[in-house]
Image (cartoon, rainbow, N blue to C red; front, side, top):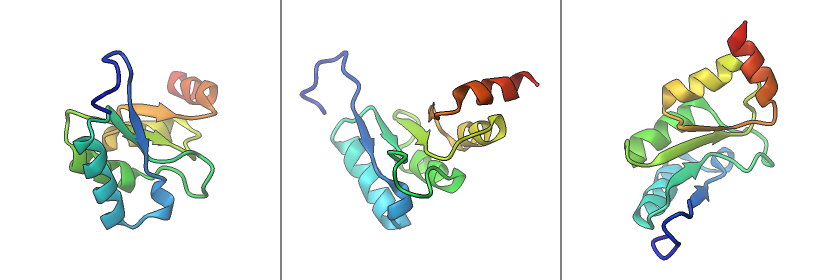
Length: 105
């Protein structure tokens, strides 16, 4: 990650649904040590997707200086807001229009 051009953002996807908390922490620590810009909870292909607990764990592990992207299984405004409140700085969702419409209600 440190060799990437400055304008290039580097993300590390951990696929948190398939890992235990120790593995999630280790992956986040390694991503941060490698200079990644953010960690992402899921590709969206494994069952489970993002959870509030996983986002909070990643945020606690990497601190405020690194991004956390919650992705997978986020379908509503309330779910997106819960991820942000847990520490997500980015949301990956295929239902972004429904999420925004939910915010307007």
